[in-house]
Image (tube, rainbow over all chains, first blue to last red; front, side, top):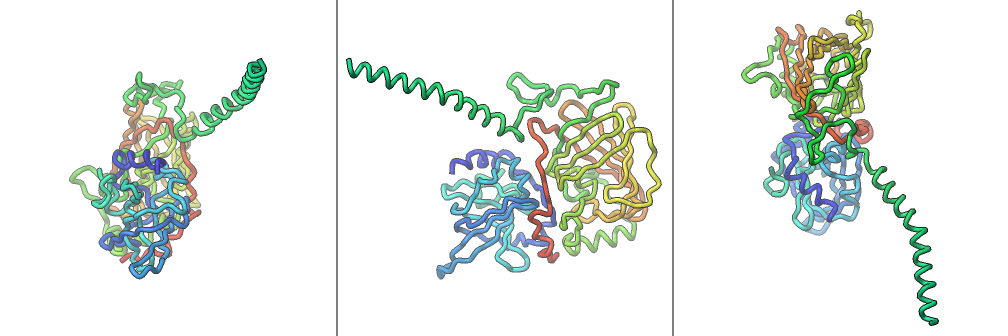
Length: 140
Length: 270
């Protein structure tokens, strides 16, 4: 998890109020419906206009469901300290995100929290872009 | 004696290996230093403070003809998605009835129909104020603006030609520019009325004319006033303002919006 040291530092220093978004946040996501996903990354799509991360999450009964997680534009994330390989399949993370309005297993990430407790800025353009209450490292 | 001789042979062998590997290792190191520097390479020609950081307060550079040189990579000091955040404090946008009607519809549906969400070009006002940089390349006949966002560009022609009679309106319009003292003035018309001015949904028609005024205050800071004149959507011209900060030691990064666009089908709007 050493690779996040720079990102973590930037989280504190640079997290902007809003970052690049190619679409209206509110048209797709509901900021009042936040969910915490804890699981294992299965796939990373480091491509514009948004990075996408897929994560296997076990529910209370043990059934594993794959969620899609939308992040910021890779260009913006890269300038904030991310690398295309910062998160990769097999990494365990906790993600706080806003659910999609269509009710599917899709969230817009507010933050990525690592097992050691560090929080990584996710690049959302929605409310909470400056950090979230559950992600103290990412708060300004 | 046998051990000493053996030790000598071993040391010689190690030295030989070192002699072979050291240049190779040096090459690798050099390669890794020079090849890993696209974003992060120290931009030549930038005045620096004793600690090596860019001196953004140094005087603005001039071209050989004495005009300010706007060349460089710039980014808004504050990202804006809603132009109401970029007007002068206390001022409001002077909507016409038609402009107000369209804007209200777009707000009611959370901007779900924004062409930009389909990777089509953003309007010039919001494009100037994104969280991605743009690069100005200033030459005598043209001021070129390369936007990292969507890997798009504009040409502001400075060869003395007037704005054209447009028979094929364009997303970015047609731009000509001139100097007024140390301020660069760009006028743009010939828009096709398709792009929204911002993500909030401020509308524009093909009657839109935009006048931009750029003034490079010093090496690292540039001010912009953008006058929006569209008598179909607004009752009078109105202005937004932006400040740009020079982005040292970086370069534009490719941004292909269509590559992973999967949101537009999911924009419900309410």
